[in-house]
Each structure stands twice: as C-alpha cells, then as structure tokens.
Image (cartoon, rainbow, N blue to C red):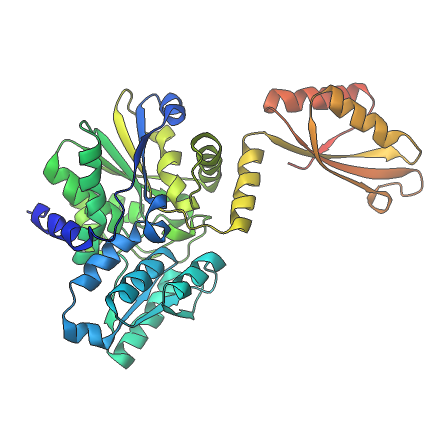
Length: 399
C-alpha cells in the first residue's frame, strides 16, 4: 500500500542522495551475540538522513507553493536538509532553531543557504515560533516528522537496507518525533512483515515510548539528554499512528549508555556520530535475541569538536579508562617524583597533574596533588589504589 509512494520518493531524491554503506561490525556482533550491521547515515549528504525527507517534500511542492518559500523548525539535521534541498531547488528557506543548537549545525545550515532564526530552549519552542512565522508570511511549513512526504523520504533507507542485506531480522533506529522509524517501518513491514522494528529513545526524552505504552499521545513537560537530535517533548500524531501499528517495541537508553556506544563507534568502527545516532547501538544490550541479523541505523554525524571531546571523556570514564584522584603530600622535595615513579611502574599513563599548596587541608605542611591517568579498566584502578595505600597515601577518587 505504501511501497509505491516510497519508491516514488526514492525516484524523487535518487540524483542527490547517497546510498549509504551498510557495514558489518565484528565488535558489536561479539558484544551483542548477534550479527550486527550499521547503516551509516552519518555519511549522508548534510551528515544525516534528514535530507531524504526534506528533499522529497520540497520536490513535491507546486511552483506556486515554491514561490511562497518554506519554513521549518529543527534541532539541526532537518534544518540542514531543508536548507540544502531548498537551495538546490531555488526555494527561499527560513529555519527556526533552538538557542542551544550546537554551533556546527547552525553554521552548516547557514552555509547551505538557510535564513536561521534562533529561538527557545528546545525543538518544541522553535516549532511554535516557526508556526507563527508561517501564519505571518504564508510560507510552506516543512514538518520534520509529521508529514507523509517527509516520512516516505526517510523510508527510502529501508529500501536500501533490503537491497544491501538479503536476510534482515531486525532494524533498530532512534526516535525523536518518529519520522525516521515511521518511514522505515512502513517500508520494512510491506517488504517483509516478519522483520522486527525496534525504536530507541533517550531516557530523558521518551515521549514516544510513553505514548506507545499508554496507547495514546503523551507529551513531556521537559527533556534532558545529551542526544539533542532526538530531544522532542511532543511526538507527532501521524507518526504515532504509524508507530503503534507497525513498530514492535520501543526501549530507552541512558546518557551513560549513549556515551559508551559513542566511544565504541569512534574507537572500534572509526565512525564519528552524534549522540542521537549512537542510541541504536546503545540499545543492542537490551535486545533479548541472539543469532539474528540486526541493522542499527546511525542517523547522523553532525557533532561539534567540543561535544566530541566531552563525549569521549565521559565514555572513557564510564569504561574505567580514565581515573582521576587526589591526595595530600608532605610539602617537601621529591614527593611528585615518588608519585610519578609509582604510576610509571603501575603502567598508568599520566594525562594531567595539578600540584596546589592552597587546596590542601593543612596548607602549612601539605600540598594537594590531583592526577588524571589513563588505565586499562576497573582492575587496573584497584591496583593503583592498593599500591598507593601500601605506600601510606590516602586517595580520594574524583572520577
């Protein structure tokens, strides 16, 4: 029933969109006890899948509608998709983005030709502002998820997956407003009704999960997650109706689990992704199946350098690969040498040392040393703690 529209969408966008790679992951396969493939939409034009739906929607507009210009609200990726597609088709675009949108996404949207307005603290605030501007100007609103032409554009991902992998048992993908999973579910269930479609949300932005469980649209008062790309307070009515009929389950993952998966994707797969894109890998440990062919959709890779640094550090801490501690030393020569020598012998790589006399409890006799070291895990940290205790030092763990 929907397959014809999905194939039409693919034809509309085929000259622009990349057929992104589907790569087998030995690391995640071993971790999950399944055969894991990663659909790399982080390598898509504009760095995310959103260009698919935006281009399909704007391509479907009449000439009269195009003359009015388009407007949208977005936390980043939809913004870039709309700006890119509009610029390519010669359509004027205005994009309302939350004030806390990462700088990279704002600048990229401007570079693609979009007129950016920063407003509000989350997607929903930006949405309300965009709807105001729509009424004032008559511009055509391009919804990021609650629009069938957008949904069909996103669903072209599933058409590619089934061309790239003969036997698909499960597809896992992130959910914000629900456009991505709606399109994928419509395509997948028509091609093979036995395929399991699993959605993933951040624990701090789980409106669609609650809606799914409650069997009615449920909104949140606020959202709080590192996965800004899926931080949506109010799901779409159209996407919810599709999800409740075509999606098998929705699970949630914590920010800690997301940061660990982000680190694994960087370190093991050499893939740079945004936090929302990593959720589909974070979910693998919560899927109660084994020996299945599972596709995890990495939805985007638009992430700024400071966020990468923070996520990597957080992931290393959660993996017990970074150990930060403080201890008081006698204020006399040779103390730092003793500590450094001990860390060297324990094979702990020093990342940072801070020596501060004014932070010590006894500022006359002692100095405070704060050290951050690279470790090999929990056992290594215990070894360091035990050795320093034997040397007569009392360690205070910071992280």
